[in-house]
Length: 85
Image (cartoon, rainbow, N blue to C red; front, side):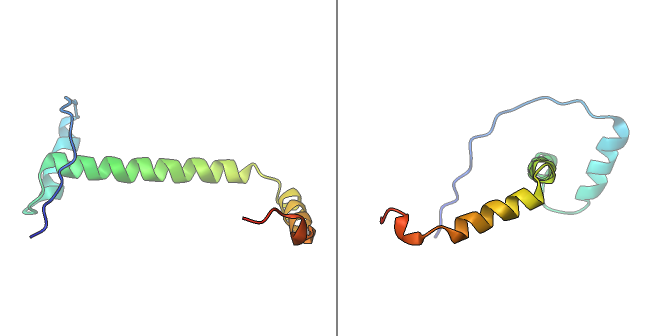
């Protein structure tokens, strides 16, 4: 039988508008998850999306022409001059 490792959690208090709490309760419906689990999963999703959005914003700042030129320069480099590992 596999043992489940439960990550250490911290207890926090949050305030939610009544309407949002009602949406949360409705989203759970008859699902076996509890509010904490749903909020945890929502925060994981949100932070993952936030990281992706920030990466996309940084990528948009890159100059595509310059990036292609750098890549072509690297490909044109004599591979024999690279150190062997």
